[in-house]
Length: 363
Image 1: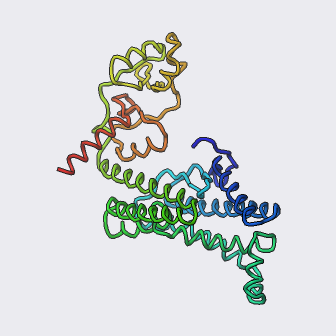
Image 2: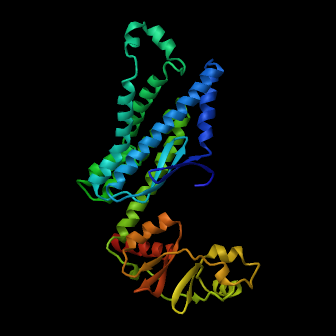
Image 3: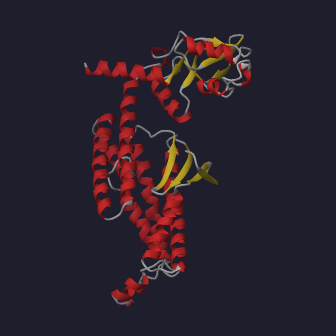
């Protein structure tokens, strides 16, 4: 994701804040000043939001550290106006594991609220009349900051339990359904409920709070995207790389030039090329690098090719390759058999294989 500021690393996970995060700060400032608050009130509201997002980070680490127990890792947490997003490599297909991971985030918020409650003077609410209490809580102040954080963490836990897939509550629902039926059906049901709730959020947002519309869009497209991915993974289940790989591929050498690559590019349908030297794979020449250097046709391929690459075993599961393509953000890999090049696999061929499998199932 572009336009992020790296805040550091914790538990070997990068914490980033997206540039759009500034919108929520501006929105809070606007609401505070519009309601007649002072500059000090506005600054305290900003402090509250920053502390709240620290709680959001803890929420995400609840998911991440629980996921690690099941061998699932996460590279980063990105803070957005709508909350935090933990970039996990995958979600366990075991419904019990997914259930525990999904519950861990809201559980952290409940734990934070319990800790904060130890430092809140609850007698204030009973010693004052309702009007005084309302006045005392009308703006964020140093005196009521803990009350605001306590309430916000309770609200975060409750909100995340809404069964709007792919939010935590939706994942809890999917995990429970998956204990009784297959994962594809469970995801389809949870996704449908999530998209319905997203539409409800849109209508409520139009009437009361436009910010709900942003959350609704996140839920709607998130549910659609994950439902699609689960269906695709199901089509690949049980199939191996050799069933979908490209076998008739052109191979270049490090001392070939960009001009050689352009000729192959224009004369066929291949876009990416494996580079070998004495039968050993030495690099991958990606389509974007050919285009970027197309003006310098005499340039040697070894000066352009990517030397940081992974090759796939011919007997590997197609399902894992699909996940790899999504996590590595690269759509072309060399395929080997006992370290000998036997072909390649890319997203286009994988998509065609899934399309064929889909047609076979529907017949």
